[in-house]
Image (cartoon, rainbow, N blue to C red; front, side):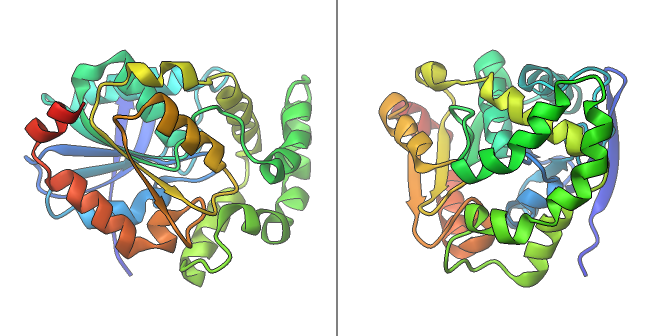
Length: 290
């Protein structure tokens, strides 16, 4: 079993738990997971890059081992926290790797503080904030209940029963029909989705993503970026990939067959080749394109 180095950063009185590996003086690659998961969501990319980069995979506040924010969770709050973290840990621009909601956060960081980001790798990033029919049906009860004063308690009570439906309802939305994900990896992803006490944060993030539609701002992104999408992604549907192709033509968009919302696990070899080629391209050549 691989043992990862655990670190805890304290930024603006907020603890951020993370896993860190790689040469201590190398360029930082900061990795941001998506909704309902943890640092493990980006672990395949983490393992690929840790020989060359100082890789830091965070647990966003309210997920994994990180305590939740002291206020309601929003995408701008996550963006500001990541910007503060980057200013604390790095004196040079970093590589951002974002999966799903982590991709939306990465884009927000690049738009607000482009000087902090050298390039980005975005895996099935949330763009419009509107997820698939399957996901909407699954999360709506949490979202509705969370709006009421006693919502947090109700969510906590119903959470175990609702999450027992993960296999039958969410698996087709998360993975391709012939997904290459292993059983062990699937169990760990599912365990993150079932982590006790995080129902209210998931509900807040569900609503926060819908309020943070960035389709009309993609044209302002100047950071060289690789965008990877699974052709069978039924969590963040391919309509968002179409938005990337239309509104952000400079992005290097790659759509991978036989992958759903987790190409880093489902088609690891192809995903790794795309990332390796992108990171190996000199920045001067990428900036000529962008």
